[in-house]
Length: 86
Image (cartoon, rainbow, N blue to C red; front, side, top):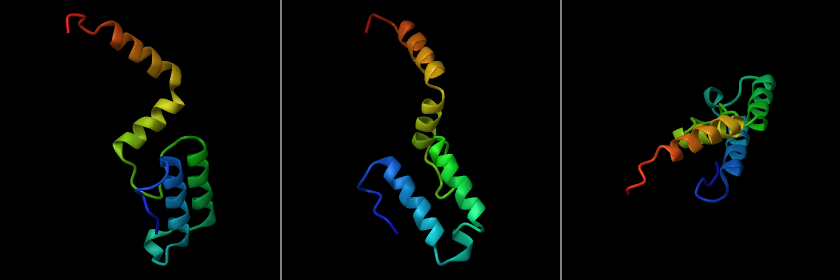
């Protein structure tokens, strides 16, 4: 399929989309072109894609990109309340 050890996460996800669309096994590929288009739209919207199981880190990055201000505010609050004696 593809080598996940090289390239950025975005390139790896695109490779997953491509591999899923070309998969010979019917159970592992998209059932319709509409399913493929929906997964591409999820990729473009920084949402987890269905082509491969998303890792926790991948889902967290996608969430942070979609919710930049609330995440930044939460990090600022967390940094404010850190003990300063360390």
